[in-house]
Length: 278
Image (cartoon, rainbow, N blue to C red):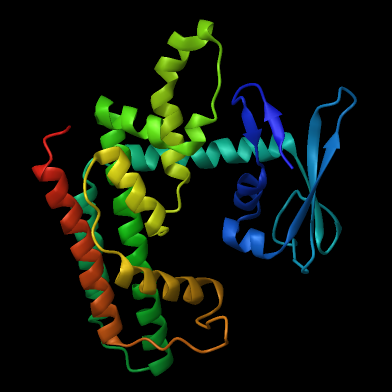
């Protein structure tokens, strides 16, 4: 289900914004098998969404939500949109204002290395830290990928045009010819907002995005994808695969991931430097 909004002129799917409102990832939200029901006001507009999950979910920690029973909740459209705007604006500002993604990346790698070199006697604590460092390495790569492409699209008209012409979500946008000059001034923010929404550990999609927008080659991702799969199980399945096998990490796994992450970033930087396109 979706709401047709004149402002966007596309079919609006509220599910990602509901996930943010509930404080969970979109992947976790989908895993709860949500069913959305639109509630209308007296004028025929959508006033709220009632979300029912086939799997039980506890809402006690979410203040202000109207709960019917433990797996059903109602959220007003006004609350949802306000929360989404605050979150999106903060995220956009954070990424756009990061002008030195490579410098930030190396600093994050150094911080992770420092944590990894700590001597911890308690085995369970050491294993937990190893897991967190592993997850952080992939998050550090995601942050670099997001900040780099947003920076290029923000500062290069050619990159902006490439993105607009190749990104499917923006192809859906429609507007009147009388709005063309107004839309021209807004298109960069539309593009940046779309870039911010991308899940940057989806490396297949990101590699296509980089190649079509920046006109560069993207490094190999086969080994990284295996690490990303491990990260998914660590974050969402408490370290177990779909077959309930436990993922056991060691220092060599962390070093392997670190090498792949650094290789990916340095490959991209080299491609950008030799490309006079910008």
